[in-house]
Length: 289
Image (tube, rainbow, N blue to C red):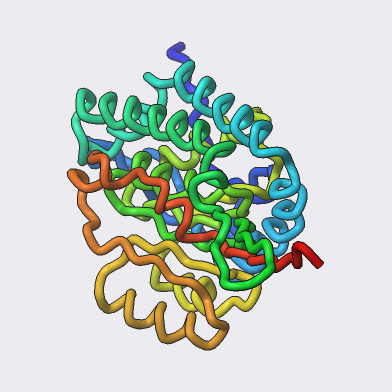
């Protein structure tokens, strides 16, 4: 009698745990042959609000860690991805939109990007912070501080590299993230969640939801506890997000060049991607008094 293999039941990764959608809804994901592969959780507005609450609780402790320690944690994530690189490549190529050779290159670029930002954790402060010259007997300096909870709509393609390129610079500086994975191929994000669960990254720092953008955009953009948005969206979604975000004075970063060549280029990794979700505190200290 032939053995029936056990298939994976994908779940969203929220607060360090694997969850099904609060509503119980799912949508099908097909493989490269068009055959049914699995059911993906269709997360709801309530799932999003729960994720934001958990991200807010985890963010303070994450931001309070030393920059060097955050770098160690992110580097460990890169190690885990390297060890399961072929499995990640298979996940990227599973729908057939990307060839296996291209998916392997995408995984390699994703791992390199994790290591890139791990190296910035204890350096960005020296570059972005500053001692400011002032006309008076004061010592004036600016230091950076994490913004808080940031909402992310990951690029549809590349499903893994786009997600990594968006969330890594945000958590590098001590922010926490609630991210919506690619709708067309969320499988790499599901696998990444499994790695996060056994990594040193505290639960709640990076939360990965799956589902449809049109259902969750309003909640992401209007939620008062989300302090910033990093969105790979089209023009109509961009306009809606910016209007809703203005009500709670969110910082919004839009990736207008949403294509595979952009995400694989050097322009998709930068110190300024870290700066996008930092706030600056300036101190005046009297001297010679």
